[in-house]
Image 1 (tube, each protein chain N blue to C red):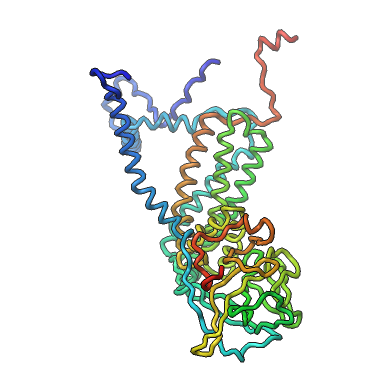
Image 2 (cartoon, rainbow over the protein chains, first blue to last red):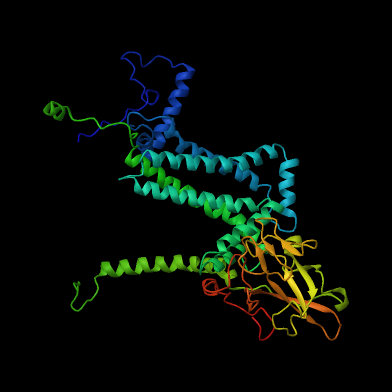
Length: 267
Length: 211
């Protein structure tokens, strides 16, 4: 198969050389600024060769027939970014303190902090949106048959990402520390405990002991804020690498185009 | 084995590889193992439980339950409370063998389906769970719904010095009311269940000689 030509650089990054005899002409301020920007980009690119990777990621061939269903993956990515950004700012106010501090800090965010209710709501509703988008994305990949060879590993990583996202939902649900989140966590941990043999130990690990105790909330907070987000970010990187490396699959209703010689031979 | 010198068993390149990668492994383990042990340690720990006085023997009757609030985890406020329903043992209905630790029947309010708090409804003489509809009869045996075993119980005793009823560690029971070390809700103790859900590694919970 012939190698496809490399995608072109955008015009703005590739200024045309000036016609001869015009070098001495003064540049307009706009041109000076543009020249400065190109200079900075060139300086970085000369040392990192990043532009090749960016072009590889962004300017790639996609098959005919792609449609809006193919945007569900990046929609999920943006839901995750929304969770990450709002989560960082919520963490500036939140205290994982069982003795009323957690509930009070969430109340403060909701009622008193400037735009606190908005940011908290974005995080809370964004969590549900992310779960919904993940399942829609998964359904798209399943029904379009996009999980088949050679994209099985992309699918497997995606499933791990889905499980991690559900774990984010489980651990995040406890953090407001009101009656609903307390009892939901009791029930959730006990559901984990019904797994044969390892269930009891899993419950003890989640609670940080045989009973719901002082460390349970901070454990959930640390898992929610540091452990799982790091894993998710790393796996999203792997997922996107594979998507770019393997290319996007065509929708199943498109038939592969036959080689012209073969077509003539059949006729 | 090829070597630069006579009698050499490992090449220098291979020796260098092993030493470098080995020291990298040691360095990684030096922070991974303590962190892992720190995270997994609670699996092997058990909350200390002291006997708590809950009232005079006259405070309790055979006909109905008295609600008592216990502190099962210290220092975390309301989240550390649990509720016991206490009545005097009635030999006419309590057919399990009696001893010094069950002269008062103290049932845990923790539903044995998934751990929600059950409520004693005196009109129905039943314990009812609000979450998924578990129902227990007057003795705490499963009368309906999803619970997998009767309500957990607490050891009780009469303190001879103070004359007060005291409540002690929690224990679990199977449908014959045989005692087991405390298990989490959702884990059946009948038949194969007692083997599928092992007790905690440290089982120093009950009074001497009891699970």
